Length: 365
Image (cartoon, rainbow, N blue to C red; front, top):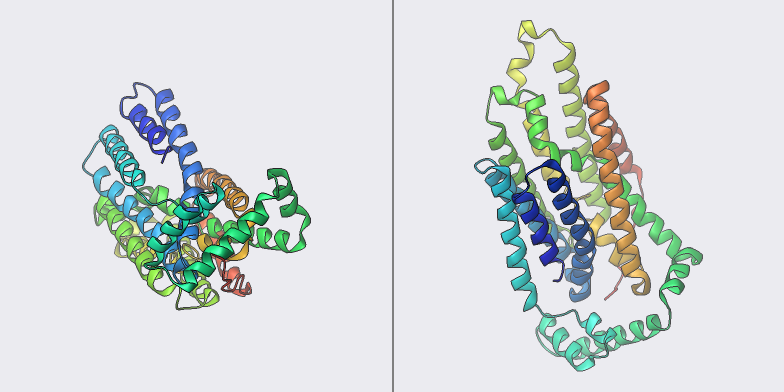
């Protein structure tokens, strides 16, 4: 909740910026707050969700994220950048109001010694007090009491020295690497740029194209939320990898012919909507697998004692990878053409089909 105020201040700095340095300061503040609040949000969802609903609730986080993306695309098509930033600051205020009345996590309350409040909170999240809820509460107390005996550095040592923990953390970091390798960050951040580079603007407005992409991405996340607990993780990753790879390969092939064919012949004019179709396939099938399974793996793989540290580590790793991919995209596009990067993402994503199932449904509360 405390992160909402710095986030609001960051957006206000961008809104009233008079030069580029103020925009960078505001953007850095918003990015720093996001890096802090995102792991907290996923941890909160993992702690309040029951085992059977953890995948569904975790996927709803992605639905909310893509809803914000659609909102940003839509408002960005009619508002100037500074007014769009001001609108974003309003969202932070709404978040502050909602979170101020939200029920705390039972696990967090137990760590503060407020067991009765934790019991009330767990009853609220489970709907009623039952023997199952009492057992869950006692199990939670037992896990936390064991974890409280370990200091921060002892937990870090557990992450490094335990063979099982090392494997779980390595799998989590690897999954994050492959997720960013799909190129989703390029699509989300540069959707309009991709449409402009592909000359889709000769057929339709680029702003309309980005809105359609955002809506389809949100639809994919909604579908994922309802099937992630019903279909095996491995199956979802297979399907997602196949279609994401095909879409990236299609984009790369389109850009290749767009940049190599003689434009005076007008060969590519009849294929101007192909990039949009490829992007729609990408944003629909990405959240079904790699866009949703990735963010619910850590609670299933990592012991409760080191969950927070592992989530933070994975988030830092993801931010570094996203920055690297965006920089790589800019340099490769300017020097060699965008099709190399899209083909590279296609090959990397297709290779993921051969990865064995990374996790099974552990009953971690």
